[in-house]
Amino acid sequence: MDRKIEKKTWNSKKILTIAGITGIILLIGGSIYLTSGKSKLDVDTERLTISTITKGPFQEFIPVNGVVMPLTTIFLDASEGGVVEEKYVEDGANLKKGDRILRMSNTDLELTLANQETAVYAEQTQMQISHNNAQQNTISKLNTMADVENAFKEAERIYKLDKHLYDQKAIGQQEYQSAKNTYDYQLNRYKLAKQILSQDTALVKQQASQSQEQYAHMKTTLELMRKKVAGLVLVAPTDGQLTSMDAEVGQSKNKGEHLGQIDVQSGFKVRVDIDEHYLSRIYAGLKGDFQFAEQTYNLVIKKVYTQVKATGSFQVDMQFVGKVPTGIRKGQTLQVRLALSDQMQAVLVPKGGFFQQTGGNWIFKVSEDGTKAYKVNIQLGRQSPDYFVVTEGLNPGDKVITSSYETYGDIQELVLKK
Image (cartoon, rainbow, N blue to C red; front, top):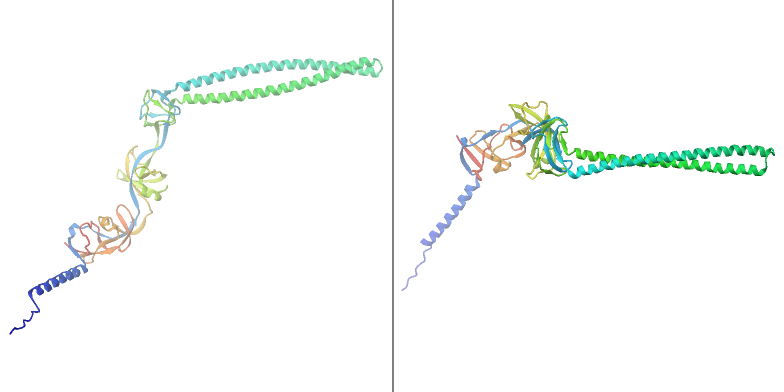
């Protein structure tokens, strides 16, 4: 007789499967448990920079580089093109106003001047000839006028006499009429001569005025040509030092080409390069300072050049306020602190490597007992080369870690070990 064999509820395979599933569940649960709490990291305080939050005076400024330059610079350009024939001084020479610097030649310009001078002399000669002819013509007309006037007066005398005799019946009508006709003829002739003389006088004046205007215009043109030729000799427009001289004997220079410059020795200014990021915040009147020979000197922006250069920067001119440093020289480089705001009271945190990892959104704050540091959210405002302004999240007296967080990853809490 067959016996029914009961199947075992728990066999080894089933037990192993259940154990494996249970282990995985426990592993996942442990992982969740561990990660759900704060992750911690032990750190040595000697490897950290712990700073104290303070409240004190703050002024936003940026460090910039400036170059010392003469207060006034006069550029020397070629007023006319030509070939450099002679140099009287070299670069760096100290000049007085009117000192000659170099001489150029321009054959075309000099020939034009010669032709213009000839034309002026010819016009002057022609004016003299015309004046003489006009005088002779006027004299001739005056002589004619004198003859006509004399004949008219004589005819008038005879006419008046014959008219009186005719009225007295002393002479006949034929004689009287002849005297009257002669008088009328001489009267008309006298009026015509006066009119011709008057017109001639007006014409002579007009011609003389036109000749004078034309001659004056030619003289003005001649003077301009002489100035152009005189401009071939470059002279110092003021006292100063000749710099940036760019001309050699035999070299051709075009009109308007740069030849050099005169640095007026009346003082200095500082030409500063500033990153274009600050262009909207820079204006005349902003102040700055720099250290020189262990003393602080002040500057103020006088002019802003808003054109951005290829280097991504623009320039400003700053002048000294008060005393100018003794011994400062042209071309010297200065480290200038340019203030972007007035001084104010603010909560400050020193700058450090923490900013690269946090972007200023959070920081590790040290607990009161100094045994740990934990994350706190913060907000930062303006900055200087040394500090950030804290607008939210920290108070004066708080201690924070300002060194780099590069190796901390997602650590939430630091355990500080001494």
